[in-house]
Image 1 (cartoon, rainbow, N blue to C red):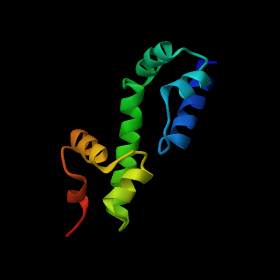
Image 2: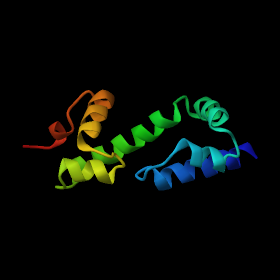
Image 3: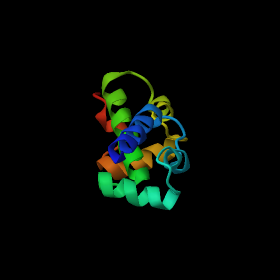
Length: 105
C-alpha cells in the first residue's frame, strides 16, 4: 500500500542521504515520475525532496561539528555536500549561523 511505498522511500533516503542521492532514484522506488513524486513527497512531508535531504544533511553535519574534532571541510563531505563553500552557504541559510560557530573555542 501507500504506507509501504512511503516507508521504502524514507528508508532509502535515510540510508543514502550522505551520498549523491537524486530525486530520480527515489521516484523510481515509488514507481512515480519525478514530478508526480515531488507532489507526493511534498504532500506527505510538507517539504520538497531537496529541502528534506538538505535538512537531514545539515542535522548530520551539526551533530558531527558538535561531537567530533573533524575539520568542517571533512564534515561537509561526509554529510553529502560536494564542496565547502556550498556547505557553508546552505548551512548558514538553514541555521542562520556559521558552522564553525558551533565549535567551542
